[in-house]
Every structure is written in C-alpha cells, then in structure tokens.
Length: 336
Ligand SMILES: *Cc1c(COP(=O)(O)O)cnc(C)c1O
View 1: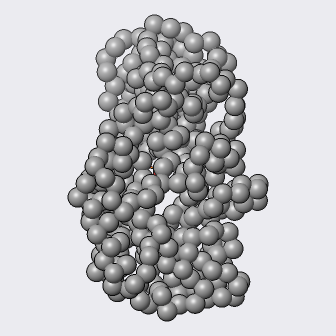
View 2 (view 1 turned 135 degrees about the vertical axis):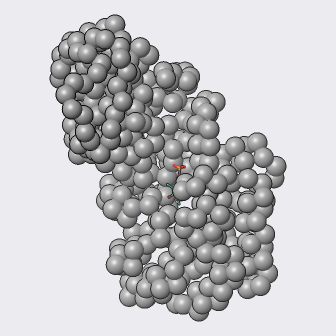
View 3 (view 1 turned 45 degrees about the vertical axis):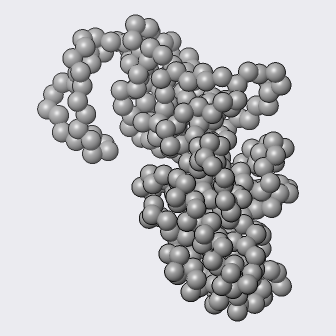
C-alpha cells in the first residue's frame, strides 16, 4: 500500500505510486481520500486511521475499507453502510507494544463475533502499527505474534482473513532482510517511498532517490552580524532559550520560510550552511564564508516532519516535475 498522507493526498503523487506498482492507496485523512477520488484516482483506497464517528457516512461513501479499534465506530459504520446500501471492509488494528492504536489480542477475539453479527460489514483482516509513537521495532517476534493471531482468529471463527497488515516503513528491514514474512501480506509505505529511506535508522534505500522532494526558499535579508545577541535575554516567541556560540561576525541570510510552513529542525541546507533558528516566518541560516544575494534561492532537503508540514502549509507552492525521470541515477545526494 502506498500511503499518501504526507503528500496531502496529492492525486499526482498517488497516480505515480499506482503507475509504479502499488496495489492500493492508504491515507489517514478522509479529506485527502475525497480529493483523490474527486480527481479520478482509481486504485482501491483505505482509511488507515480509525474513522471519526462523526464521519462514518463519508467514510463508507469514499473508502473500501477502514482500520478500526472501537466497536461503537464499527456499529456506526454498519448503520451507515446499511443506509447507503454498501458493504464496508474492516481491518482490526492490534496493539503490539508501541502504544498507539490497537486492540489487545484478547480484545480482538472478543470483538470479532460482535462484528460478524453486524450487517453490511466485511471483516477483511488484522493489522498493526509499530515504531510511530515509541519507536518499538517491528521485529521477527512482533510479526510472528501478528501471524499467530491471524491463525487463531481464523481457527476460532472459521473464516479467512484476506489482509494481514504488518506495518509501515519501519517494517522494511524486517520484510527485506528478515526470515519468512509469515502471514503478513501488506505493508503500508509512505516515507520510504517518498524520501527514499528506511525509517528505523533513516538509511538510504538502494535504488531510491533521497531528494525526490526538496524545499526551495528565497533570501529576504543577507547581512554580516555578530553570532551573539545583545541586551537582556528572555524567552523567544516559541518559548525557547537559545544559546549562541561566540563566533564573531558571520554572514547570515534570512529566508522567507518559518514554522508556519515547515519544521525548521527537519531541514538540511547544502554543505557549508547551517540553520541558526526560525520563527513563524523567518529562517536564519549561517552562510559560513559566503554572502548570498537577496532574492537568491536555496534548496533544502526535508525529513518527514518538515515534509508533512511543508505539504500542509498554504504558503508553500507545490510543483510536481516529471522531467528527468528517465535515465536519472538514483543516488544519495543528501548533504548533511
Ligand atoms: C502514516 C501511517 C503509515 C505510513 O507510515 P510511513 O512511516 O510513512 O511508511 C502506515 N500506517 C499507518 C496506520 C499510518 O498512520
């Protein structure tokens, strides 16, 4: 599954994912799914965040399947599916220790018979999500726990689970280098596809670009200033107390970019430059020995946090460029 949420459900990117071979698309936001549907993206789509009970009608209307952990929501989905004359697929999410969403394995066994009694629903499978909140690694043991749960649910209730959804980009090392994947037949991949890195250690993935997405910003002030502020120093706009190094006078540039647009800590400037700080609308960069002209642009690399916020900011212009795809060499061109 290609996960589109970090691209704000961009229909262009979703279309590229489908062209590149993903079997289905997933997003955590119904709004993104509605955008992709409205733009004619055809692939099967799944809502990978538990639906809001206030949105169940829209969920049933727009997605084939949703990930769930709450019986109340599942009941509401059933009622909405009855009203709309649809069948809605359910994947039950299982808690395996990262402490984000999920039912315990025992609760899965308790909820399945209730779900099977509800009209217009189809139990499609089980899934889990690790690494996101507490960094718990999806290792051989966690994945075999999930496989065993799939087997035990099938045996107890005499049914077949079509989907065993093992996790996100953090599962790639396990999937590519681990032993037999057992029952796991789906991974939900966002960051690894978009940024070209696995997500446990953020190592580049062979054959993928790590700079397919960049953020370009423009210089609005360029001056030589002392590295240390003067005057009495209290909290900043964002409650920090920055510590400046004593480096004398250095050329610094201000870019028209700030915390409203991205996560400044998730940006990497080119070699020789370093980010000194950011407020809502200003990003301050130490330029080393260079003076950047006002109006010049700099290309930053983004981590996942910078990417999601960049895509979400209405101030950041998104430009999709398919040129240069053919014959380009995937290499790690990251800088720092
Ligand atoms: C965001 C998300 C993913 C994708 O995670 P990546 O680390 O970007 O691959 C997968 N599953 C769920 C439930 C998610 O919320």
